[in-house]
Length: 339
Ligand code: NAI
Ligand code: MN
Ligand code: ZN
Image (cartoon, rainbow, N blue to C red; front, side):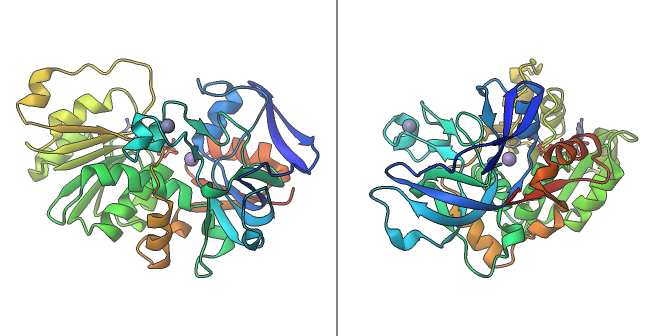
């Protein structure tokens, strides 16, 4: 079989490897589709602090089970599955309270261990979730990015009367917009981005009002309308945004952040406490696959609105360059397998 391997930062190769055999408790997934994510590009460039090399990248993938390891029901062979990349120990403090995504010995498939940009991948059987027939093969790998939105919104507990402000209309912002509108029925969703094409996608995903904050400050735009957001999500993740979000937020607002920048964000206690603002951070997902699969089945979210390209996995280099360099024409890129 063939696998996409980052040998070391900056060096991507397509390697020929023997077909792996599933260990006890594992299933082997024959790949059909896999999504490219910003974190794959970060591992390629050596900007992911958790990655070890050489590494098969890819953590958003779909295929069917074609072999099982010891202790796994052979009836699972043939199942269409998506894979939760979060591998956890099951007994540390975060695991014991239902938050395996921050397990003390967290292993993320495609980051800490080999991932899904491969003709086949072995994963723990409990990480492989069955996809119902109503979700087509070519969209099933989109479950994973929506689990990020499911996780952060579970902290924010959106209500119909909320006014939400989302920074960033990349894949993460768009999934959050769709969940706020399609699942929680939030009254008004406002989106800020610097790229008009991304703002068009935001409106297609349900945004009520979009602001190009390259041309107009979000503060001015909101002040002109007398709007104070009650829920804010930073899905752009520039370290300067948190301070602005706190300034613009309504008293009693909730703010969700998902960035990993190592740069400091200047904040004062006064700006947060005087409005009694709640700050939540969210990483990956904690057991959100069943929920997202249900939302997709029910048509509450529309993954096809994010996907701009399907490309052969053998063109992975071109696909990653397109994904990285052309944010106007390109949003989610899905690779097709076998290579
Ligand atoms: P992306 O790069 O495709 O999208 C970011 C968007 O934000 C772009 O459209 C860009 O134009 C816009 N943007 C940049 N600076 C801005 C600003 N100052 N104001 C408004 N818009 C701005 O990235 P993607 O895939 O949507 O991911 C977004 C962020 O989420 C990344 O930083 C990524 O590391 C993080 N992330 C966090 C996860 C978590 O579990 N916590 C999981 C996945 C991604
Ligand atoms: Mn991802
Ligand atoms: Zn644990």
